[in-house]
Image (cartoon, rainbow, N blue to C red; front, side, top):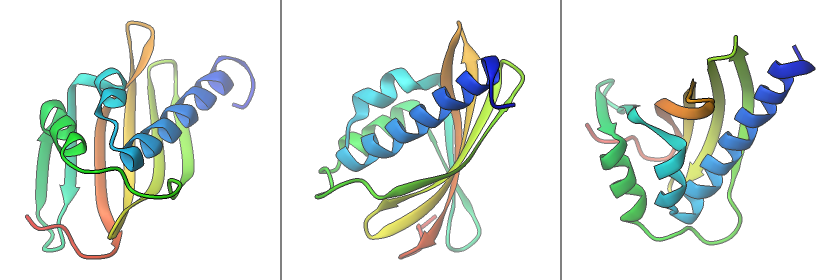
Length: 131
């Protein structure tokens, strides 16, 4: 649905996905303090086929623990799906040198506001993540 509430929700999720990619590039953990749900969980698929998990505090520490990347952010939002008025998903790739990641971001509406609740990702290009 393009128009109406879902059209506005699709635009909101697209804007959040864009802010997410830009904040990763610029190493801005404060963006994620508000964007991420308190129960946020990030799951990485490693090069060996295993998984690694981070909660919100761990993720904020990872973003804060590195320098911003030079130049403009490099990313593409491949799709955004909204299901009803309470769940949404963004599929994208984002460059985090020396890697390009493929991310699947899951959002829920909490207290009337979209919150990032889950991130599942893999390395598309560059060195595989270690488990």
